[in-house]
Length: 558
Image: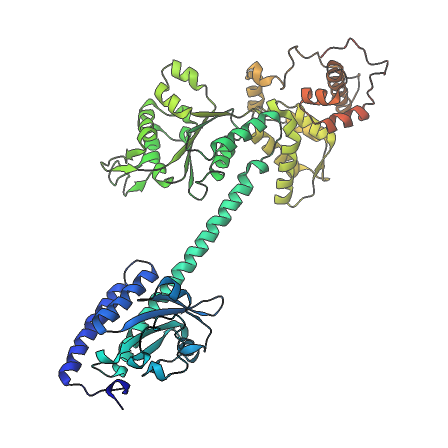
């Protein structure tokens, strides 16, 4: 038998000592490479290069078991082209690599040319005489589970120690590598889980705050939806304007949820809820010892919102001092924490909201003009609820379902009760409507909310709220859409009549006047009253109204 066909060879002690030294050096380098915070493929390439350069092992290969298919796939192969590497796919038990995984044991092929089960599926050794080559393969095992295999070639002319010595080195490398593979798999599983959670959260946000899921189909709200759709994908600063309770935060969240920043944080700050000194710390953070009580470093809302959206509610209530600092952040996207000197760079989309008249504040010197223009890039006006009365039935039904489910009750609203809801001025807007619907759902006993229950609830409104309604400007008290002429006086109830009769008489008169004004075109009259055509059709039948009725006077005016 020639030298190249032997499994072991006689070597001198000096050669063994030299190999031991190279072996220890190589293992030290392998350990260092495995600890690097890089991709697994990068680590594997580095390990295979160490085995080649330090120990003379050629064509080092890392093959891993695919968790889903169970196939063994070559992930990294030193000296193989991408096309050759892609051919390296085996079933357990197929070829030498398949046997290593299936049998969970190392395999040495002393002479590749004499081994029929050596497939060389990649074709990497096609131009090399296989009679000059040995093959060593070791399974990657972690807690009894085989994760894959590490293999290498050994050319006989380079052999100075027995193949068993190569096997021992490769077994040590495999043990170290198996831990690294398992850790990377765990990290990858966690990463995929986080990505799935982010995808689900993004889908949930789009479902919850998507434009199609918003309640209300009035013309005023359609303009809001269109503005949200147009501005969501941009980086422009948005100023939401409208009375309290009109849903400014909901629209801000819709802008965020439909933007490219949807997976990043949405941070809200109520500027009116904090004094000037605390607001600055809340927005920009503070260093340890910046002021009494600052026992540690604290990130501000701008830092927390980095990459996402910062919603500044009640922006019209911030002081001039804070306005100056806010202006700088909007211009440069840089700031320093309170008590700090380090400049912090952020990437934040800013959405602001206010119910105040910023133009008047600018004229009075209470709000900086340059900040006003910086915030007012894209203004969106949210209509008061009285300006979109046609949405009240939809909103009422939305809140009814929510609170009925929350309180585990079966509750319905009569047509008359919805009509009474539409007659109310709603100074607190949608927030007040939500509160009223919750109260009606909770307090109803027989499962049906009637018009009388609604009227009685409005009578029980706190005196302070009633006083606020009485002091509200005429524009707030007038129903919308408001006709140019003042409404006619309400009809008086017959002596001794019930509240229900009184309500019906007033309701009939208002519908009649609207129909007369619109030439008995029901769709126009419904728009004038702020209700749906279906509802006005129901009321016409209920009160038996007809233009041919002699009781209907052609001269009647709204």
